[in-house]
Length: 92
Image (cartoon, rainbow, N blue to C red):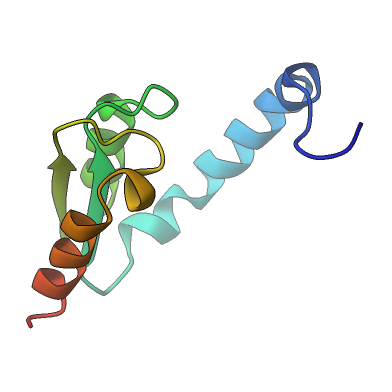
């Protein structure tokens, strides 16, 4: 079977992945540009706690939670609202 890695394969490297991400936090926090974070409010993979964490780590960020059934694939679940968020962030 091909495709996505198994849950076991993903969790086997979880600690290594988390530690590598932590080492990148100073670079994230020093990112000199505005960041727009658009998240599906009903994301069960990276829930709103993850969205808030991203928002906290990027000092010049805005967070928009898309409601009304938008989950992990927010760009598919609510594509019109994602486009609106991108255009708003771009100042259009």
